[in-house]
Figure 1: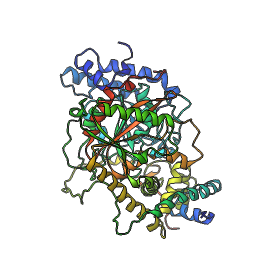
Figure 2: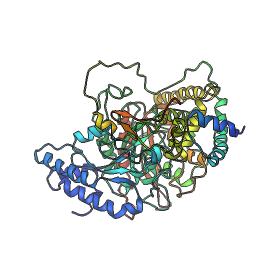
Figure 3: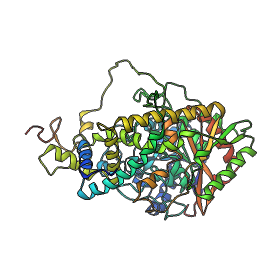
Figure 4: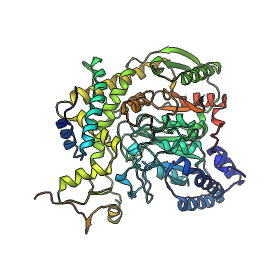
Length: 95
Length: 487
């Protein structure tokens, strides 16, 4: 089953990932090919099996809520693409 | 002394301790060689010459105070996916080309506590996604044994650098083979510790349930030494285990009498390079000769589903982890628009390379409504079976031995247009991450002038077993002493 162009664009939208038209065509073919390889999993009977999310059997981890110094504001903003006072500046969310 | 850069960690430590060598001399030798050969190898994204000299002088003062420990004053290279405070950490991506972390990863804090010396950050496949280091947004790294070949990946820079003596040791990270496969391709030692053994705090996340940091070294002794200093519980990574860290060098005994070794037949795959098969058979015979009991016909029946499960699980986790690169808090940011959504989409479009986008697409698809059960949940259930395969095998065997990769290093450009062929080069390493068990790759011979890697796998937190087997084999074979001509 080959993915349609609309499906590829829909997935990209879900990920908020911009793609060129060329990339859309390329991924349409490549993702379809990769998904075909995933078909092999259908052969495996997984009835009554629990999923494994991680490999080490640790239960929920708690730690005491101890106050400690955090990073400085200056440090945090060193990498900010766009800043105003002590805020990250973004484009308008509501127009 | 000549060629100080060729020393191992334990050799350099001995000389430093006996005051026959200073960290500054050692570091200068490493930097000199790095400058000489790295324009051909291209292992480094950033060379931290000034910091290295500062670190070396500080280490020499520590040593003068009589406070020397095994990693004190020893120059290392760090994969550029591990955060280093004040030193650019790019993940070989345009997205993080100018990112300077405001904090150190836990492993870096630990190495700093030992007075280590950082000489630079190494090239990798972008965000650790790849098997050849060709997915770096900056440049490809070359295999020191044959410059036309890839060094493997994603820790290709670290493995190539250690093979050509641009550092005494290096750190890498491994999500599906990214330490072991390049170690195999470059003829060095690479260990992926048990999931939970080494803190991931400050490791830029790819697939959080699979990622581990580990050593890439010139021999097995160095591997044990570095593992000693990077392991341990970290309250900032709640997946680290609260178990004591043993002294891994205690496991380095040449005796492997009665160690039970299993050879899983599924790892000797169709399409395996005949020279690799032959090298492995010879190596396994050697283990038998050294006293191990070898069962040549073990089966891990769910192995054949590991590749598909991995390429659902890892991209799914990646698609969630990489959603953070929205151009707001750090990293590349597309500015030429007033529209928020367009800014976010274009930031990712121009900031990420093709393989990263491919995996985000794959993961987003596998997690999307209507496909979640068929792909992601199914893969997690298959993960249960793959993990069980290993648990059952380790009831009968102390270690499993396989090739690290079905082939030796391939040519640059050979697989870049065919993602599935590229993914297949990790077919022997990725089941290990799925199960979370530890594995090491050590040099086990050559085919057509290129190194062959042997992978040794043991059960959760049994790094001592695989180090013991690896050390015994290494002591009985000459491979680890051979150097590429450029060295």
